[in-house]
Length: 277
Length: 277
Image 1 (cartoon, one colour):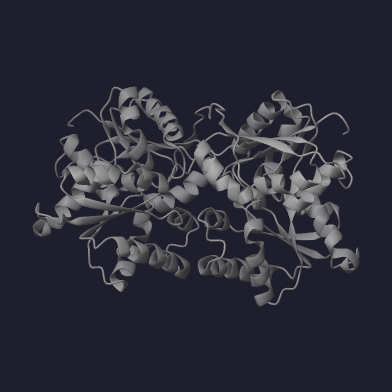
Image 2: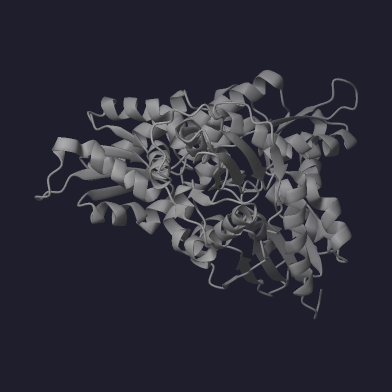
């Protein structure tokens, strides 16, 4: 990447994908990033495959037209339901969050991994649409892992309400995880939604309280690692500083306010984007 | 309405407006209803005025083109933010849910009403966007009532999760209402979101537990009354049977399944509608 500055497009239905951008910035600091949050049509999590694919393709095309040489679909629902459609619609390489997440679970198992039955069990927490797609199950299958996918529809609204350290969130987690651990005795727990890293400490605590010591894996981090590998970027010694610009299909002001929480830094450059929907 | 069958268009961002349709069916049984749920783009509650107006106008135009002679905007957020835009975009009469709700609060106060200060206080529970629009405050002002508007963003996801009789919903209500009653000593509580009637018993119980005996007013019921008045329909003695058809911008199957809970009866006739967004 010496000399030339790579432009990386990052797409999510809203703010959650900013946790992926947050993981990318220190890993590939020499790049320029364009982020699209389709906030006018969020959340994708409860919508149909056809609708999600149509929306995601519109954003992917916008990013390609704007110069992105590499696309990161930082949205679990769109990665689960529309990755093939996006790849068909654009010419640049496209990475989703599902495969890197499943691979990270595989590596986390380390010496606990065995190909002999019973296969190691990975508990995947995600939105309704991601669970119903069974995208994580398919990726885990291919790696010889068994996935138990559990929908946690209230976690996104709780994070967006700002209740990240709150007794209601703890109680909701207890209910979801108690149900999940009746179906699974996981050796790894995979956060299959980009909102969940914001409550990762609470998820870890709730698992421990229920007697589960499995490591919790954040697919945002795993995806950033996969992108830097795909781009051939090693440990960064560059003194370049990543630049980024953001587009939101709904309120720019709200994107700046909420988005800053997810990105962990101030977002100044947000423009409104009309995708016609 | 003898002889001619009036066609009434009912619009909501999703399923909640079906509580308004549910209230309309027995009141105006001689009518044919067309319901549009813009489920591909729900929820509207956290989106900007511009986006909501654009979406709502598309649905209103579709209903008019399909033969609706009267439109009911059965969505608090769209009523709050886009009623003027909708009225400008179509030729038929349009009724929203805000004014009927405020009027019902006024009537509920009955003998407790006094024009002398302090004005009676109405507590309005609603989504973020409805609260920020201050649409209820404006309507209440015009009636000599003071409105305290409180956003309850988690209630819609809780209802959609089916947790209508659940300790988490009770705890969330306690938190929201405890905060609300620190700002207000209401003589009436207005449900400013069409999802809330499904948890009206829990809202009433939570208010009682906090020492508030104010009546709880459902703007879905109030709106149905306003529509029958506007159409000059008295107490129905007709033996006509209301007919209805539904359109959803997202999954038809999901609309049938979730919608039936809101309407309180089976929904067979749902078609997919592409509004291009």
